[in-house]
Length: 167
Picture 1 (cartoon, rainbow, N blue to C red):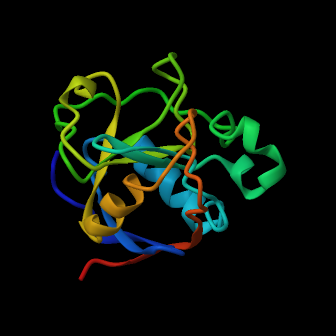
Picture 2 (picture 1 turned 60 degrees about the horizontal axis):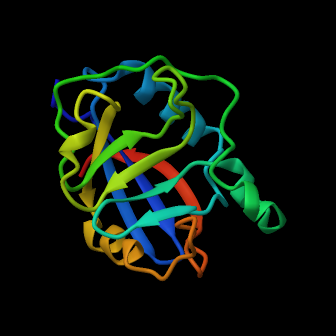
């Protein structure tokens, strides 16, 4: 279940590069949709729209491509939702989870990267990957100044996201 896929996800941001490994055995539907969206360029130009120091950074809302929709950031996603694939992988620093509404079967394109252990999410949210390179970049992003909705004051943009062979 905790065996990483043979591909990694590279997230090139305007703040630096983060590489993720994925857990297809633990969350096959989440991994498949994430890869499909990456291959289709869905994430290119999307901003990290929610940061909470000591917890996580979150991205994946296509509304964040448009700064005029800032008041709605965090409410958008891909039209196809995925049922929860709760597994025994703990939410520890570096783990990647599927963001969702209160409905456990509402995950679509939004994801978060833990910048600290978040065991209170274990069994309630889907773990589908982990940082394999660039945790320092995620940690730095988490410390940016933000507003009362946890939106960073300065843009953190995913310039390009792609799949690459595991190094």
